[in-house]
Amino acid sequence: MNGMSQLSAAACGPLVGFAVSDPSNQPVGTLCSIWGHAGTGRVQFVGVRALATAGRGHLVPAEGVSVDAVKRLVRLPYPGGLVHDGPAYAVCAELSLEREREIYLHYDLQVTFGPRLSSLHHGG
Image (cartoon, rainbow, N blue to C red; front, side, top):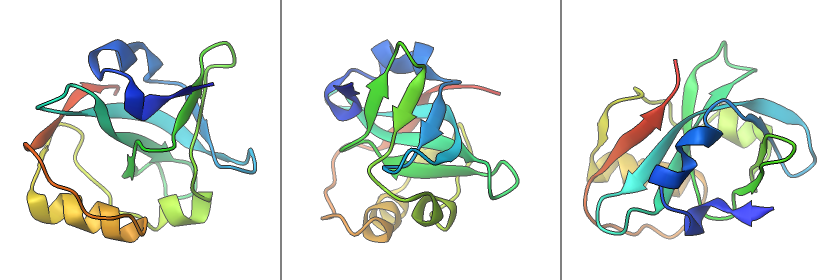
């Protein structure tokens, strides 16, 4: 499996539609969008259409997210319940600094800021 945060957002477009699981291999949903960092082009957040919340999209930091292209699977480093309780989003929206902070704090990660982010690839 490859670490998603080390990949360019442009290269990750074909991953939209992959199944998403948590660390214990429990299904969480489907990868529905990739959010790239405007400065580096690397994946900063992934959008997950969650199974348990009627298909709402949730943003998850890309750090620690891995991809198995053969199995068409994206594995999150967070339990599904944390994702389902996480910040929801509009697929094509630009993220404000306040929104970024909300996402990082939800996942108990250090808040970092850079150029504004926007969804580069998304599925329907």
